Length: 509
Image (spheres, rainbow, N blue to C red):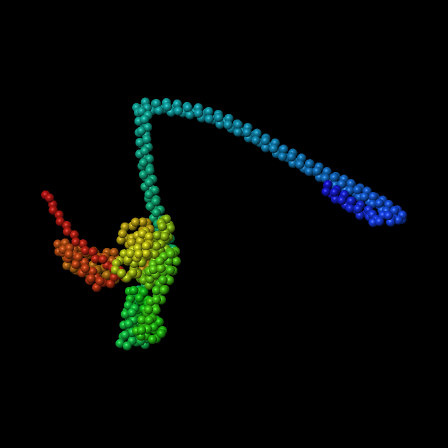
């Protein structure tokens, strides 16, 4: 309101200044005719200022009335709101009073009940005492003795019930454990099972016509002799027309020979120098392929940061089979199964992963010794953790298990190797090989019995201690070893163990 009045007053002052006549620059020269005109202008300015002042006053009164009416309306609204709050507070206060009275009534009732309970407890104790006194007189037993008898009876009954419940719980637990174990094994096999075809020791190479066979043989057979010497495989060209067979127990050498021979046939210039050149190139290419396969295997099971040499060893599994089962596929399957089992029972997954990955690494090392010994020595050279080395050393039960991870590696290997369709084996040949090993030992002089064990990896020979001395037994083991090497075809190694035991007893009468 004050701002509006100040604005109006300022406007009025401005108008008065505009309407007032300017002073003459030279008043002494003002004529008599201009005086009446100036007086008239002053009169008109005065009237206009009065009119403006009246308008300001009227406007101010109207604004004051509006403000007064607004203030009254706000006062009425505030009064109504205040009355409403007062009513709510009164209602809440009344409700609180009612609740307080109800609580007081409940407290009084509880006090009365408590007093009644205390009185009843006293009466019960008195009745109990009287009854106990009567029982002591009737049974002629003191309270302590009766208590001991009663507790003994209750203890016997409780012990029997607990034993029955324990037996029932153990039976249920065994059933649940068996079912749970089956579920774990089935789930692990489901996640790791693969389908693959059994592999053998032959490779075939298709040829465009039989004239190629003559070029492969070469003059006086020099080409075929060079090829077999450089590759270490045997070439058979008489079985089937239109193809050549390559035979070798070493799948890597056989694959190198196959690749080199296919490239030589395409080239057409088959001669000893070209043969050596193509075999060298094929060997280099196969090494690269095996390294890439090793990387793929490690990535498939999540094994990273391994030494390049170990990855290259794993890649050799691609061209190696065990009883017709490809070792790369077997290792992948077994590792997946082992990791799944480890996750289910809370074992160390990393240890099981590496143990499954390297459990058969010794099979691709061309040195003397079992694949377990060779694998353990290899892992030690590359400073693998001892727990991982233990799983490799114990996965055929050659040593006692030292951890649950070792057991899981053994189980995973057994599942992958023994499941239907995993491996191909001629059982007649298998039995024949075991019998041949036993016959070689049994036919020796001084031998009582012989037993081929560990799938033919060891033969135990029991000799007659009266027929052979210790030195002769040592010589006998060397003879059996040499004859087995000469006459029997077997994977890995065969250990000959001679047992010479002298027993003598006397009876005192």
